[in-house]
Length: 131
Image 1 (cartoon, rainbow, N blue to C red):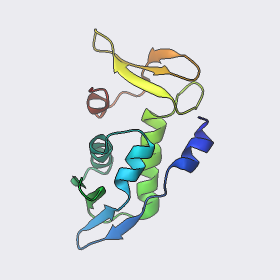
Image 2: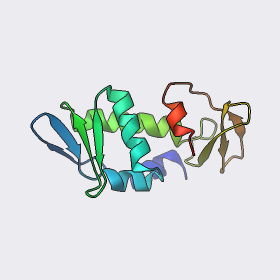
Image 3: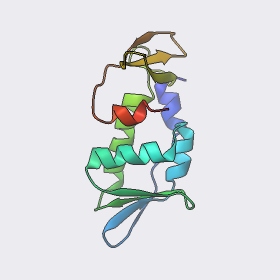
Image 4: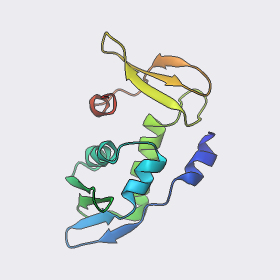
């Protein structure tokens, strides 16, 4: 699916502010649309903001320590989509991430059939490339 069309299917982040936290109230729905485990997406948010997060599974919400505006959280989600959902070659949503036997990170695009080394090396990859 083309990136613009794909992004239209992702719900806008809905937030609720609490004492020292912000809560993404539709977090499970967002993760589901991205075809990602909410726990992995929650870890990415924690990684990106450098703050503690907790996924409240029975409510499908993510609590983030500190205060963040909706547009800041949308930028984090956009960063995740660009790194782990969209193909770097064709910009369509359709990549599968995997590790080769030598430990190198690769992706395969189901749309353009490119198979290549994953171009974005960072500490979070160890979480994303786990089964």
